[in-house]
Each structure stands twice: as C-alpha cells, then as structure tokens.
Length: 284
Image (cartoon, rainbow, N blue to C red; front, side, top):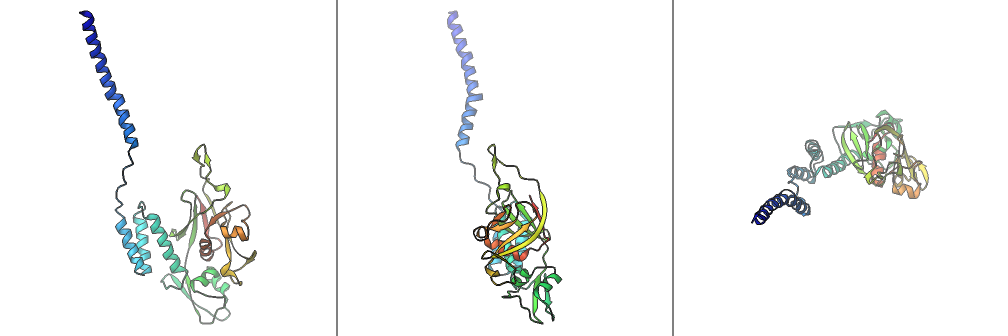
C-alpha cells in the first residue's frame, strides 16, 4: 500500500514538474521557432506618398520652379520617406535642367558682352567657369558678340563623397542640389569585409577640386578646343584616390594616377560644367 501511495505521489510530483517545464521552457521555445518561420510583417503604409505624388504632378505639368520648390519642401520635411531617394533624383534633374540650359530664373545674372570680352574673361569676372557659361547659354562655340546677353547661374557648390550612401552629392549653398551614384570605388576606399563585417569607414577628410581635365582621343584639351563636346572628363580632388572619372576614361585615357572614383559619363559631363577649381570636397 505504501509503495502505491509513493508511486502516486511521485507521478503527481514529476507530472506537475513536467507540465511546468513544458509551459515554461518547451512551449515558449516552440513558439519562438514558429515565429521565426513566419514572414516579416509588412511595413506600415508610407503616409508621405500622397505628398510625393503632388510634387510629381507639378513636375509633369512642366512648371520647373514650382516643382523645384515642392521637391525641396518634400525632402526637408520628410527625411525618412520611402520616396526620399526618388525625390532627390527628380530634384537633381530639375536643377540641372534649370541651370545647364538658358531657362530664365531670378537667381541667374545677366551679363551684356562688351568690346574685348572673351569667354574666359567673363567667367573670371563672374567667378564661374567657361564651361558653365557655354552650357547655360547653349553656345556652340566660344565666340561672343558685342551686346550678346549671357545668363549666368550664381552657384556656390560643394561636394560630399559618401561611402555609406555610395553617392557623390552636390550642395548649393549647403542645400541639396543633385546626387550621382558611385559605380566603382578604388581599391583603397572599397568596403572590403573584415571578419565577415564591412570594413570601417576611413576618417572624414576635407579637400577641394584642384583641376578639371578633358580628354579627346588620348589628348588633353580645353573647353574651347574642337572635340570638347565628345571629350571625357576627370575632376581632380586633393584627397587620395578621390579623383572623379568614368569607365569610358579608363578605356581611352587610362585611370587617373593613384586610382579614382568611377561615375557615369553623363555625371562627369555635368560636374565638369558645374564645378570650379577650389570648390570644397568632403569624404565621409
């Protein structure tokens, strides 16, 4: 009889312990495994999309200046929007359409060509580049006519090269202007895995544009030379390995000494017109 009682008590004790072990340890572990097998929950809806669509609608209406202002408001008010990158790309296209064409805006200076003026002298006087004057006025050559009206953008550009974003970003008066995707990093700046993790970013460095170089059929030329429209471009920067160039340059003119950052040819064409020697550059 005692043995039976002891057996019943043992079953009760161990049964209770097993039940609580199951509830406290096994059941939660099974629930965790099941949870991991479930697909991630969908992200919450992006409430900024209607505002983005309003900006796009203004752009499609052909109103460049209102569209520019709308996109500026969007990127500044909604920095965490899922449409932020798309909005920046559209804003960048608008900015180059405004400033690299004769499109009239209040922030362009009108210069009347005087006797003895040549494009380099006008560019120096207005603290800009001859390339920008040509692009902004749709000039087919460097010859100027007395009395000719030149529309010259008044820009104060700086460059940010971001390893985190894989982008080269132009700022105008410290405000976003346009961004360009980096296609290839030089080996010295590439994000090589270290122990299975991305390499740490190099320390932030400050520099400036030191030279703009144009190449045509293996020969260095200037914007005033024949063949400039078909040339490829290097933007030389005094931060190691940060000269900007394109894949087309590597095939025709070779890589810049010490390597460089590869962008699309169109990006280099625009940067060659927009940037000036002395413009500040940050690598981060």
